[in-house]
Length: 455
Image (cartoon, rainbow, N blue to C red; front, side, top):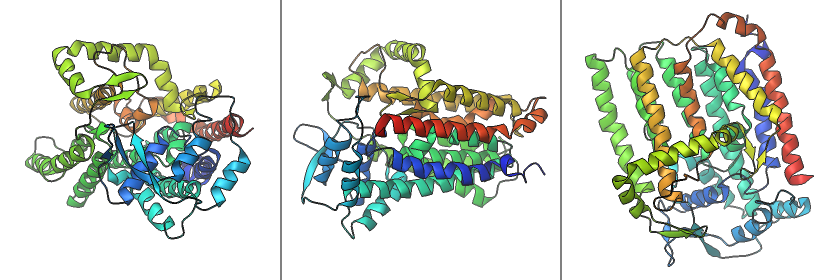
């Protein structure tokens, strides 16, 4: 009876209340006003042309050839608005750029300023959209919206599937609240590869949690391995995360569990790791960025000789920017320059606290919790290390470049540390207020978007 009510069904709430906001966000957010969206679009364009690696220009930057119209749209919708809170979007200019086809021919060389590139598996919807749109030569803004829409559909399907899997473990409300955060929804409604990275991680982790409640079959292991490989190929930053599947192979020291784990490492994980390194971590030269020289090779040497510098930089970053990371996880619009009303952060804090008190039906040993904690810390540490190597000069004691959205795919691991409490049976009585809070936060987010970019 509890699950039959509309306001007590997380799957229905996401499907009928939150999914329409995904479409609204894809239209309300101006072109290139999601962090790194131009780079992700160029990366998808490069894959659609059959190139897995970016070329190198004479200046030593990564780059590739893109439509020359990209430069014009960046001049109209990115540079005049980014970093200028008083600047607004010209609606007539946006509509003209949206409906008019290409006015220029040829291509220009777009330089990559971000060498931490994603893999092809998280760009498949954008690649298919670009292939289809090439048949009728649309405007670049229309092509961007088609890429957003294709990514939105696939991501929404994966999130809905994750919620269905989470019903068996009692984590469906936790997944709904995390998926309903403004940062999550704006990422899912963008052309960014983070959309599929987040949705793949949600579905895969939810599937892993659900598999603990039954005896795994060969099909289950194959599905988990393929999803983990797709996630690993998508972004190297979560290289430790696929090992989370090992908690599903129980009992731990049985011959079947060890055999499955070894076959997973040998047949799927290690080949995917080598492929991902070839796609992502090929040598990139020193480069000039924001008036400083970034030298990854020298940075590696320095860190091997002085590892304490990196530890101090991480500690200072967490101490100085911890609140900023928390706000970035919930939602900061534009290029991380437009915070939401404080009531939105407060409501999500209350809803996440409620979901933690509600608990789950999972039963984990201390050893398993310790393993998950190790994977979580390892993933966070790798994200900090990758950012330190690619965005900070040699020996820098202040770590810059990390963003709160990087931690969203790791949030579904958190229920491992919050077992079911005695208060859980009372939490369901107030579940009806969760969708009310989610919808209120979405309206506040839409109002902030309108005020920032359009009104």
